[in-house]
Image (cartoon, rainbow, N blue to C red):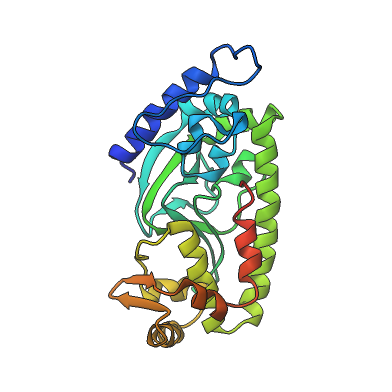
Length: 282
């Protein structure tokens, strides 16, 4: 189901191995961690608090950790490739792994008894899946499905529970992220019940764009309608209107955002709130 990634994750893992070695070395006389060097590329130094190579990671929860905390997790992180439509967890089954998306986007979908479904939440590079398992609480009643194919890092839940129990930075980051997720869930519930399909589609595309970047989104109208919990005809009508206004463009199975500012103007009032919840680890 999952396969090892190629050069991108190989580079990241090699560089973070160097970060792990640096973070376990004795600090210099000034009390700051030594600044590692990344040959050829890498972020600009941001001071002593941000000089570890875990900042090369795409996932913001992991990159928010201090170098010494990340060094403990690094040996347990496995790069994986997630396919669109793949189910990460089955209902009522134990979660063995938590996933930290990099370029992939995962949707949490509630399935209704008559067969319909609606997306309650989405997770990209700003967060993680499997949070309830790390907190050791009953599993959620939704299914986690890959909405956009891409890369992720995964770790065993038992390892993350042990790190969470230490009570350090990892615990603080996850508690803050959990609070943001609750706020996002509440906002999405209000949005789904009160705003027009056109507005919700704009907000949803913006959320996807925030997580996937400027690359075309590999999404069909059928898949979008499942996530929005509405009819495909409504999504097609709204998407056609946005294309005619030059806000998006789409071909078979791919959607591109061509005017981000206009898309934000057409979105419902919920977008600024859900955007802020995605920036919790910054």
